Length: 548
Image 1: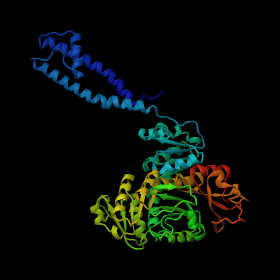
Image 2 (image 1 turned 180 degrees about the vertical axis):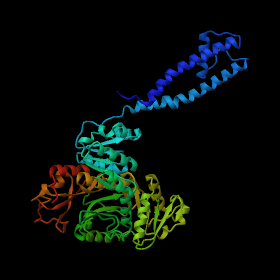
Image 3 (image 1 turned 90 degrees about the vertical axis):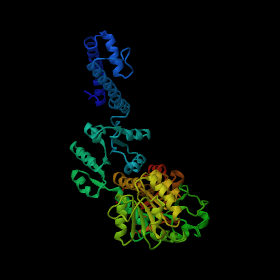
């Protein structure tokens, strides 16, 4: 039998208690008027008085009483009426209406199998859900917050509202799922993992945790993999800032063993500024492949030979370490100074990780945070000009924004670029869709926890290795089973799918230029570039093989 909701029980109790209260009040009033005031009232007159008083709408013809006991009774009845008005709406009616509205949300997952169950939505799983959809794998979100569940439902995602103790995992059809992703708080995740193992689920359970020291307890609870995306994001931001951590170049990400995907800004005075891509002959001169260009915060992913390379634009390129370094020289060198302080704003989980890594390699870090604490050098708001003037920002190698709010990061980027336009800004972002806005505000590099976590989780759950710069620009690593024996031009890959072949890895060799004699081999690792939709078309048209 379906358990009645608490608000419904309270409402039924109210509906039963109100008539009883009015009836008792009417009988007491009728007796009091007859005995104490010597002015008898009929039952219906007394009932009308009680209803008017308790509802605070009036008192009919009775407005004066002489007996003290009767006056006290009427005063008490008036206050009871006032309290009833204030209690009925917030305690009884509003929860009932909210639950009636919530009842429109799904309470169980649809009939699916080989899906991924995601417990609680958040930035860490946003990109993963897109990756799963792109791979044709259903994602079922179990959400305990009705507002978040409704928001995800409006986005067209498969979500249902349920608590763990109400059989949420059974309702998510966990028995037929390929994996479970626990994305709640650390204590919630532990409970979910234990519950999943107790119902007999033997598949992959991946936990996204906040504290690194919770990794081992999660594994003991039954998780097969545990990740800390915020700490990984902190490490990525530190590597982008300091060449001591990442000797590659600023803004680089390694995909596979050899290929580097990098974002480098074209500085004023660069010999590339103002030229078209065809005029620069970057492939011949440096060996890099240009994948896209950020211009005023907008990503141009459809690269053509007549695309102008603009001052301040950020080129997304792929190549070997040597080719990326040659390209950096043409862009008027890497934007970071080789000495000076790193000014870090925000000292939460991400900020502490950034500071820890930079200090480990001997970099000087000045930490600005709103709250005083160990490791904080300047107490204040990065948005306050007085704080900026008292900082070491003027001679900084870079400013690193690790604040919690994307809106604060956006505003801080604008202020920093006005205050010291020559100092590069590296920004931590929560939501992937805000990366473009923060680039537009002037950030040299912006990376979201959603992108970092999505790439890690997609690699774990789908076996796909990829770097997602933007939904319109993804670089993916795969085996060339469907390409064996062909040449990129002969196979008409771009015409058929919309992706470009960036490079091929053959043993220890990274091939960036495909001459006329080149033919794909079965053991080649291929790197393709395109939008989410284009990469799906490629995988469908040229199914990848398994890595040896």
